[in-house]
Every structure is written in C-alpha cells, then in structure tokens.
Image (cartoon, rainbow, N blue to C red):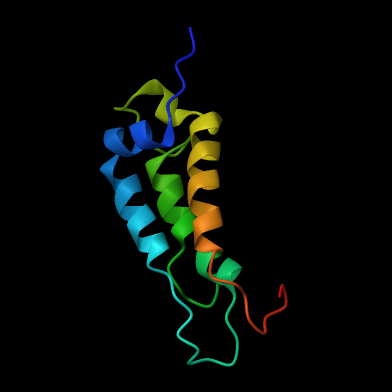
Length: 99
C-alpha cells in the first residue's frame, strides 16, 4: 500500500506548512539593498529567518512524533522542500555570488 501524501494533503495535516507557504510566497526583493540573494533568504544567512529550519520543524525526521507516519519520512521532507524551495527562489538573485 502506498501511504504517501500530496502536498495539499500534507498542508491539511500540518497547517504550519500552509502558513509557511504563504510566508514564502510573500518574499520580495524591495531593491533597497545593494544585492539580494534568494538562497540567503531560504537558509537564513545574514541573521534572517531560516525558512528551511521552519520547514524542518514541521516535516521530516525532526517533526513531533504525534502525527501521520508519512510526515516523519524523508519522502515527505522532499515533497515539502520541492514545494517551498522553488517558491522561495522565484524571486531572482541580484548582485550576489550565485547570480
């Protein structure tokens, strides 16, 4: 039996994933700095929040054990990462080392 879940199902099990997705979709480069790095935003470099760390607390090996078993797997983590990381990087880097 395949017990995998879709991204939409995962968000209904863990509403924090839906809130994190909203936060990631709200990421903007307002142009007020000399450069902008989408990876720095995702990983929380330069004292910013780490969206990746937030995701890690909600899905995968570090998640609370009182949940749907699939939410604790590396497959669930990969689904969440694929859903969120690309959205976080949808705002293009500008003037940084990875641009």
